[in-house]
Image (cartoon, rainbow, N blue to C red; front, side, top):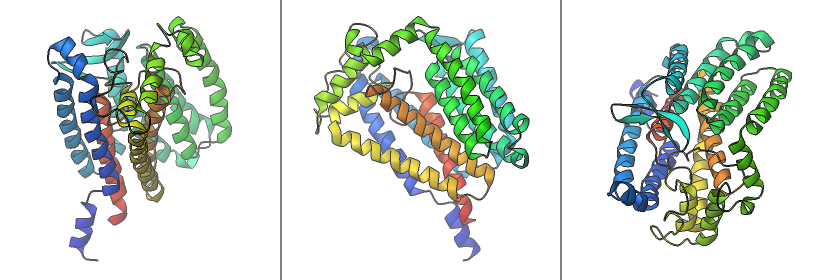
Length: 371
């Protein structure tokens, strides 16, 4: 193979990653408008308000994907502590700065010059890079408790405490699961991971039952119809949306639950609107697109000989997979309610921008085998 051919291959886009992502983003733009137009008209007097912003987010996300596609993934190896430090600073700023703002009873966002973003999204990304770097660096001593396990748990605990202060229990749960999986894949001794679970589970139990609203959420999850006017309201209307959609759906724009019945129809519960308007066939298409994306990410992680690149690809893929699983589980009543968006589909700039950047990095890692 000539040098020119090798160069052409290395700069090609991974279609098996690009196709499902762009398809999901396209569907997301349509469904954001469908689910938010009535809300936007009532709140802002412009039914295109959320659509216009989502289009800007999508364009910025595509730019981020292209840029990250051409940045050699080894660069992140040298930026691990920079990103981690920045994530900690941003999470602290959420609690102790004048640029933070609240929505829905939680203070999770920063707003600078009219632009809002959620630091917990970046914190998850920074944690993946830090773990990939640290596990690769310590691979020869990874099974030593004080080297392979303890330092990573300390970092996790710091980020978790800062995110819990917002509060955002769902993001902490995903961060803990992601860290455990990456530590396991990186070769940390299973006994150490098990001991960590024995500490995390009681701590999670305490956090869950130390807050009245979390207890109410748990009770409504177990039997939402006992609390139809308050804690069970969201899940009841979400299930009604899926039930109304049936196999073929009511048609795009013809859903009923988004008309001020289902809270956050364009963010946390956009999957419910999809179930109502596109029906079972639409839900299955969404699932297939996510499965294709996750399958390709796992293949890239498996085939990459560079340990840092392999762990990085695995972490990025698992993070997206966990967020998808939790969001869908909540909307289908399989998990307690969490304030998590559905990657590439839900309205929101922080989530879309970070996830699109992650896909660009995955493509760059996947291209290493052609060089």
